[in-house]
Amino acid sequence: TDYTLDLGTIICGNPITQQVQHQFYNLGDSKPMISKIEGGDAEIVLTYDAINTPEQVTITMANTVLPGKYTAQWKSAATGAPDATLNVNAKVELATPILAAIPANNAVGLQWNAITGATKYYITDKAPTFILADDGKYGTLTINGTKIAETTNAWYNHENLDNGTAYTYYVTVVHERDGKVIDAKTSNLATATPAYVVNEINWSNAEHTGLY
Image (cartoon, rainbow, N blue to C red):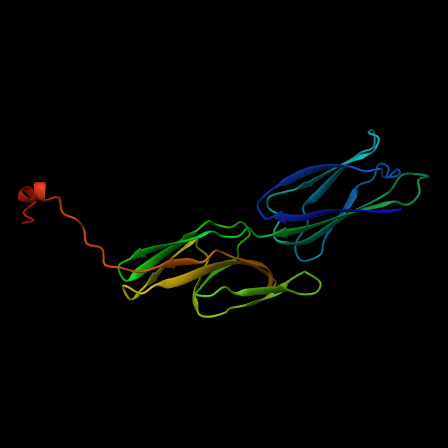
């Protein structure tokens, strides 16, 4: 008998512990055989409790699991029991960055929340397009518009700009493995207009500073 349990989408960096009760038929005192569909070692851990009825399986995924498609399989090893297999599926994705743009003199400062699992960040003036392949293991990222910068930091200073001109920005977080884009998420649109900032003078103290 085959059983399938789908954990759905899990955000990278968010550990989970999920207990599932299912009427499994005598999986017995078996150990899970762990495999990962795309790259690296899977970190899905199954703990089976045969005392409870219905039987209880605890699924734990560490917060170090990188984006990708995962599967864990548990096969029956009980003596005299019929063949039984439990398949657990999960997909780990990047979180979406939240972008802020701060205007300055001939510049714009960009900052966003650091994303667990990020390989790099692209800063662009238009939102890129990410399309997964049919098998869902990796995808194609298309940069639309102008790529302003590429960085591994969670900030960037865009300099040598024209004061009084509005500039638009997106930041896209990317996770690459083996030269392929496994996942990508694009932030909100952020807009800022550089301007020369004049510091105000406290004239009541000017005579003491010589600024008059």
